[in-house]
Length: 233
Length: 233
DNA sequence: TACCCCAATTTTGTCGGACATAATAGACTT
DNA sequence: AAGTCTATTATGTCCGACAAAATTGGGGTA
Image 1 (cartoon, protein in one colour):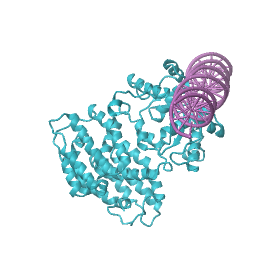
Image 2: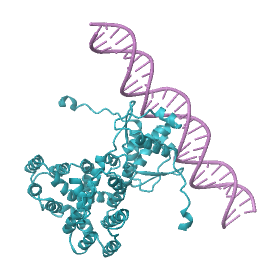
Image 3: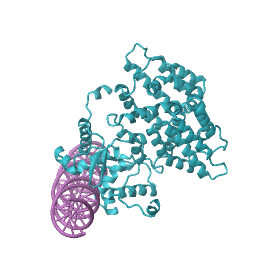
Image 4: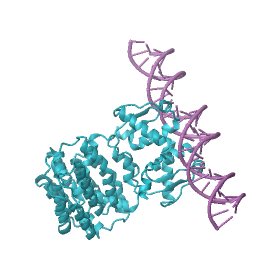
């Protein structure tokens, strides 16, 4: 069976738009279009590729959704560097994603925050540590509303992402915020088992200042224990 | 300044297609369309929303690119559960992404692999350990071609992702493979400093079998030392 | 009756043309 | 020279039509 089918070439079922899309992409790569360069008008492309403007428009729409180009009304389109995260954003509607996926994304976040310890330790600056201490100082007490605590939690962890110097990760975190909001509220995860905080924010800062990456990883794992407990029960 | 502008409502610059897109999404959510359900024909939608089919088509194209629907030629479209990773895939062309982003994605991968230790330890099965041992047994020797070594590397780490039971992470890894290929070949990262392997694959398996999450995290960090060294020089 | 082939129908894909609207540039006025 | 108006240009929106592919149903044949 395998043998018989081996030599048969795939039938090209791609539509015209598919081909134009590929065509445009390779065109941009070949011609070494730089970010900011304007791309030809729809009509020109239509004529030079020998297809209707409809097809061009649909292909360009795809490129735009891929983040490869950006177009302003009545002013044409320019090449942009695709930002993976903003691409994700478009389909990151918590109401649409299924629950399993949401849970998995949550797990990814935990993995990331533990694993990024090395980048934090490598790149943290004295100013960063000051900022973190400032954040901890203004930490809302347990008695405060949950909303404030969550807000602070986000600010603190957001700062950690920032320290990594990794823009993609940072954007990833911002992108995920609405998802976590949703996960927390929707009862997708079991309720918090207890409010005991293992390693506190202050403890983390202390390790960032005086410890090493390994200590930070383990401390972060402990800090996130509540979340893990909810996942593993 | 801030004060003056505060009360001014945003002007709605959204195009017709934008509105239709939102309309369709909320329609699907309200009507509680399930995965696999067929959605109305383009013409029906056009008539019932009072816009042209062109607009409907463009809006549906967006939904398709978001992974919310899937349409087969001449057979209509059905609801699907958006798969974040496949969305990403469309714009994950290494030639298009800029170098900084590629490097950052590489860093994310390292973070993930270290941070996922807890999920591995929690969910690993006896069979998984057997599989890992089998993989290690057939590990190509140093003398082998680099290609084989990389292939094996991918297989081993792929298995680790699989053990996490987290489909999103696993897909994420598969998605990133071409990127790493590119990163390795393009000299984006400094060359390997030395071929000394810190913790070997066999060592990792041993820890998965007998150790705990903390040990695995640290071992994984050591295992990836070559990559970190290239980043941090 | 059961099966296969062919035609009619349905639906999406592609096309060309048309007008609307917004941005730009150039001509005109003061 | 500065500002205003107008002509041009490009994209956004819409329409009607045909093409091509998949489905459906019917009719003929064994």
